[in-house]
Image (tube, rainbow, N blue to C red):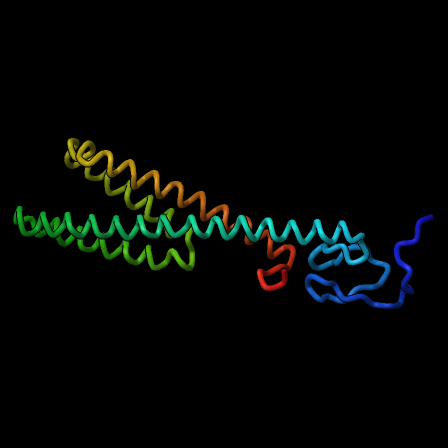
Length: 183
């Protein structure tokens, strides 16, 4: 029979990862699953796994800046389009709607820092909904600026993926009770 630890059973150990106290007989931390009585190789693997998740989370967060910029650009395009419709075509109703839509996109861009997934998904749904409504009112509007529409939709979909990935890595890091400062 192999002995787990040379320390007495009534002795407690502090987890190197989260600081939780454990019996010396326990191999893994019950809070973060760190191998407190594991081999040095197991401890290194655990720390490398945390670093890997942190790296992937940071990369996903970098990618999240792009959709926020896309939402801001979308707000600007809608604003300029509304101003053009209002002043050049004397269509003040369209101008007011576009100004409200631009404001909505600005709010979503601000919300993107607190809830990237929700903000980007909402921006995508609003954008698609507005374009579908416009297509019912004026079917030719569906093809006007089609390249720009495809770019906006593609960027927002990519942003949704990045937000989901960042959230998944954050959940994994929280399960391991790890933070960037710990390692």
